[in-house]
Amino acid sequence: MGDEQLLYLFEKEDSVKPKAMLFMKTQTVHHVDDSLFGRPNCIQIVSADIATSRKNEEEKIHYFACENDDEKRDWLRFLRLHDTTKQPTRSTLPLRCPSFEPFLTRSSRALDDQDVKIIRSLRIDLMEGRDLSSPDLIRRSSDPYVVISMNQIKFGKTVVKLNTLAPFWGETFIFEYGGLYFWCLFFLFSHLLSFSCSDIHPRTTSLTLYVVSQSRIRIQKDSDIGKIHFNLDSLPLNKQVEEWFPLLPGNAGEGDGATSPRDSELGAIRAKITFSEERILPMEDYQPLFELLTEPDMSVVRRIGEVITKEREEVARRLLRIFSMRPGGCIEFLRILTHYEVNNTEDPNILFRGNSLATKAVDQYMKMVATRFLHNTLKNLVQAVYKDTQSYEVDPTRVEKADDLKKNWKRLNGLVTSFWDTIANAADKCPWELKSVFYNLQADVMAKFNDARVRHISVA
Image 1 (cartoon, one colour):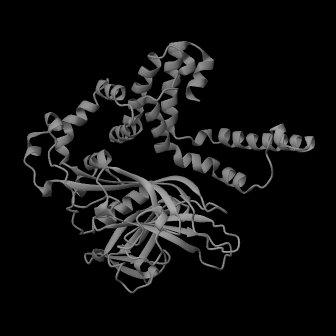
Image 2 (cartoon, rainbow, N blue to C red):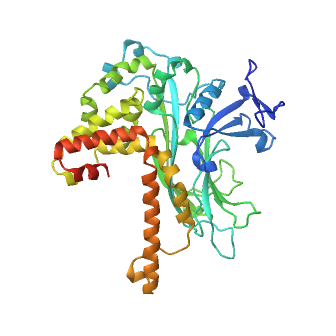
């Protein structure tokens, strides 16, 4: 990329002539959810005039696959440096929060809009569908899935549910850097404050959920069932909207649509939508609060865990992101939380069985550092089980023949052994951070209960 802000795309490493050239001032850069292509670490560069341009989709959207998370993060950071879009101006959140003023420095009390970054995030919980219209008029069935689109740009999709007009997905999609995590990144990347790194681009004005039926014939395109359209400006800020949303025809305009599920003959989707905006002050204004949260004994954090009941998972997630700013910070954070949890538990049989901040934090940390390890270890086995048509039923009341029951037991034992051997053989690949957390946990358990059996139970 030169001074002209042109991005040259080459077919191969040894190609001399670029396949395409993108003028980055007319492009927007977006994250792609793993679900869209069935693989992680993808990004997309989209023409800013995608809604009005007559170009085909291949010319308007370019997808890229990165080798790992770090490479993806580096590319997003670099490409967004050339995004000149202004910050959104819709937010009505106050610049000041009186309850936090004791922790803020003097400079934060005289701010204008140029000092504040607006971060937008969107959480979509796609739960289930009912009475969906069937493109197969003979069988009256469908293989539905949902595609998530913002400003006509695809970001993710659910799994396909086979042969049903009332699918259950139960999938969650979060499009954000958002909240405390964003301002934590300011510490590390303060030289990049001039650009917006929220996944909800400032120009994004609409969200559309397309319900589609997968074609059962490979040469045919998937069939549209209907869609749900939202104007982001019409969604309440920082509040969850949950209801059955009626499907509109695919050619319906933004102002068209049914007002209740009964008004639509295409069916309805139950979803939860949470659109959030946060105003982030300059980083130096959060320094006293950061220092308070990261005190060595973490007394403030432990007190927060005691008084918060309903949102411990979200608090744990955000605290982990704060402590991840320091080398080894998350491991030390979890060591102190689990140490107090062990010392305050008298019965080893109920250790980590409660809904505490410590249990939520360990659970969230495992997702942070070990999700890729889990996928790499078990993905092939899980996919094989999903495609397997053999029976593994071992309930005698559900198996007619005794010989079939014996075969099923043998087959099930073989399957469990395969899973166990695969997990055991992957021990060396388990993230070292997770090993450190569990080592500290086992040491505390042994010191408290002096029972080797409890040592293994506590980690399990």
